[in-house]
Length: 200
Length: 349
Image (tube, rainbow over all chains, first blue to last red; front, top):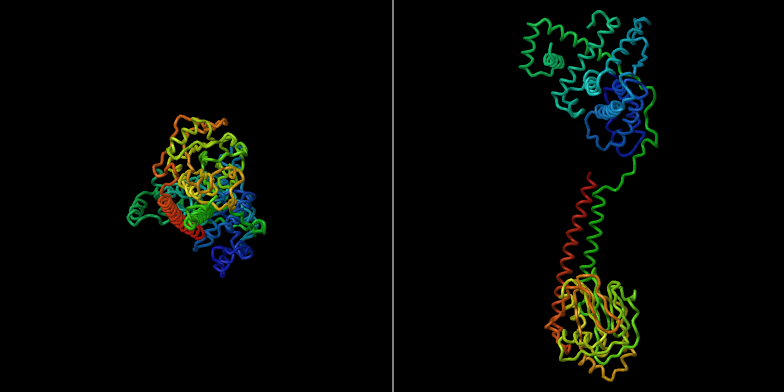
């Protein structure tokens, strides 16, 4: 589990201070959650530049709306703002014919060795597989992409996704099912990157 | 494999099925190899997606002071509404208290004119008085709702009413035997009384009140002042600078003693309600009132001799004023409470 999935020890105090206008306290929260926020933004936006802008905007929006935070998981609250931020941008992309988000190619460049047993070739293949998965995600319609990422990347349950996307529970189920089937079909074109035991 | 089966499998993998649905799905999976293969491929797909790691942010997203600056909040609706209500409430309370604390009868020589939104022309005359100084035509000073008028013939115009009776032409024809209507009519017919009381007030009762307000002045005698009250709904005795205690020099020409003047004074008051804004007075001493609908005030309570029942009328006016003041205070108080409640509710958000 990523470290940012566990809240900060003094998180409630930091949140209260930030709500009173203490930027330093809020920035402590930013430091803790910025990987999660950026990661979600990247999965939704599909490329690093837009993801960075969306993440920054999400933190600014979160700071200005701190009074609306009513307790609960601060991480979930932040990711909800991030998802909304990205979704708005994606819908704008969709309305602008000149920009095709599907054409954006994932640029994930994580070739660091996962463990000492991994060879450089294996690290490169792993990185290539992740890029292929991200490209398949990028090929999804924004509606399906949002549901898929929130469910299978961030681990939200159906009800939380329905609340987040403001859609019915049945719509979440159907969109998620179609998105998963589309990803599977997409990845079948990159089976050589997938370990034999994981071939689809 | 149809879409419903995929949805069933997807929800099954997420443990999002009810107990009954789950049992049905497991029975179908056990009996249908194709369905089982579909489920396996979906499960592998989910595993691949879940294998995506959390990325490292390429830079710090810590907010700068500029980014952290919250946009200045514009005044929101509750704030504006409560402020407006509070101002209105205070205004109503002030007016209400001033109505309650101010006596209805104005001191001798003082003119109180409260004009709101109508055009009023009121003049009175006193027998034996011959005015010499012409009034400035449509004098801007006289357009003030409340003002001091030094001329014994007081003309007060709440608005820029066209009223230019040359005082040199004024004479006094109204007699004690005439009713108000008769007096006014004869004045007009004889052309020697530059006295026009025209009022664009909405109701004849306004003109009645004007006559009431004028009455004490006429009875006080010595000054032989005409009193003008141009108003619509309410007379509020204003407190202008005191009128000169001595009668104006023009009055010394009168051979009558002040008491005689008072006794003989005839108020020729005529109020006409002009529906149009075209009321005008002709300078030759005649009074003409333009407009189809004019209404002549005939007030039984005011006798031509100027000896009505002023006390009763004043009491009645005082009562009206008291009621109005009390009503304004109550409304103002309610408004003030609403303003406070709205303001508090706005702060809680």
